Image (cartoon, rainbow, N blue to C red; front, side, top):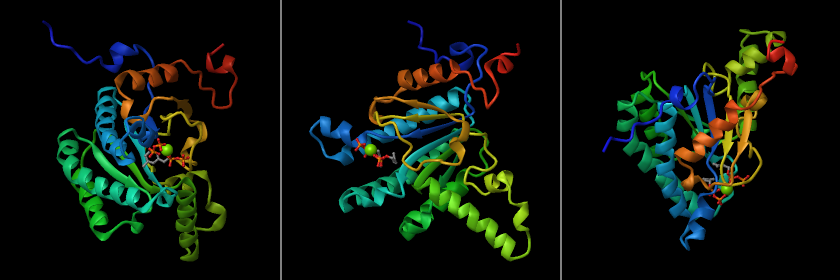
Length: 254
Ligand code: IPE
Ligand code: IPE
Ligand code: MG
């Protein structure tokens, strides 16, 4: 029997422009567990395997940046025991996965207000980022205690501080300077947002970066999201006509 060969992006989508930066709202873990009569946290644990799988596929398909929404600034409102278990899971996964990320050339970045996390978790985040900083394969951004409005406010604060120090004048503030103060500065523009779990909303994710992203919503719950579901999202993406304000005729060169 011949071994199953992974289909590269060139084989699957010949001649197509694939997204360079994909973001995912990893939703539906709780429902996935509840459907099985288990506690919600069981779904979060199962979701870790999906994270590994989408990282593998993103590397295989040559995607440059993958941004995953792991914990929103609003998720603190959940029951304390679920929040606590999620924090424990972060600690465990960070520790366990760094080696694998390193050997796969993945650069890990945690985006969000990490100052609200325990000292232990903050230290582990710093260690994981430092350990993978020199890698030049996929950039994996994990959004933790992240909110799109927080990010924009934070960027405004940074620029205001520069103005106060006399390094910048207020009229020099433009989209480029604000963009450079966002957590994903220097990475490709966001091309595709995928949300699993069936809800069609953004939940305060990447508000600045979503300006011209394509949106893809799927009812598949995060722990069930795998190669077929991710490939279906890419199929949808390559079938879209991105016009960036121009007409269809202009974009098609007629
Ligand atoms: C997403 O799954 C994971 C986090 C928000 C941490 P949910 O926990 O929101 O799952 P559902 O939406 O309740 O099914
Ligand atoms: C969004 O999911 C946040 C993450 C996936 C981490 P939620 O399940 O918290 O979103 P809402 O509150 O239902 O919009
Ligand atoms: Mg949810």
